[in-house]
Image (cartoon, rainbow, N blue to C red; front, side):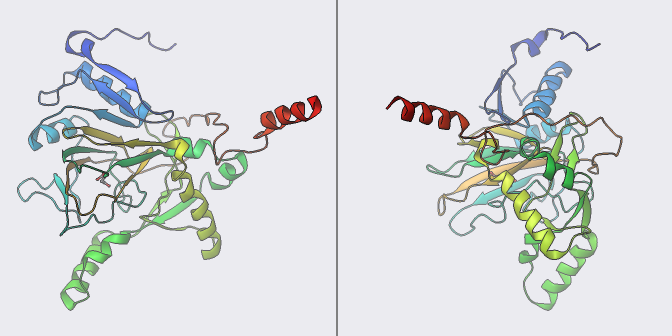
Length: 329
Ligand code: SIN
């Protein structure tokens, strides 16, 4: 029998979670990240992340140490091998984009660092400087994107694996003997990885489409042409507005997303304005697919009447209305 819900007590009683998007996104109020989170508040935030996939906590004028402490409540922080980080706190990435330093590799749909054997479970981004216009971030629910596929495509991709590679980060190495040597070293440290195309979320059991155009280069056991066609189809799922949540940033917003169930895209429409964000990332486990037996996979939700969903019934209502109008004339 499910445990009855216990009412929150103490500081946790002031915490409110408001759903923002149909499939992802929630705002959490009543949390102060400049203070250590008590266990009850942490549990509410953790559960909101798993349920809503992206959580927004506004008005957090916090230090980088406080942001890192919040991240450490969820697990060990990871160090990005290619992103600009603080010298003395390498877990903290500073994304400071401006006229002389345009955004790099964030305006492509992706889940963070899926070139790793164990990609990060979640990312926490805090807005420091926000452009007057533009600079939104978009997220896509990859559980909704998976659930909305037809049974036929789901049956075809369940159990398949794809190859993930360091992709765009190769461009960081100059075409010089030193640059090429540096790139080979990183390729040795981060060789291509196989991950399931359909990942089972280790907490919710929801199935999520895990391929992304930034790091996924091929589907295993398919010809190059088949792989390209299937990947194009699957990549387009993240582009479907119905499964997305888009955020207009204000300074001091903290947003945390679950890399196991979402992808994101930083809209690069603000150049040459400045946009500065600070980011920490929490280590994750090795993705597993259907049949791994780690957790029971949840059945797909019935997602209907969206752009890419099964279309057999779409337009029927309007057609009936139209036919009635014609008959009345
Ligand atoms: C990222 O891809 O981690 C950065 C997202 C953003 O800057 O909005």
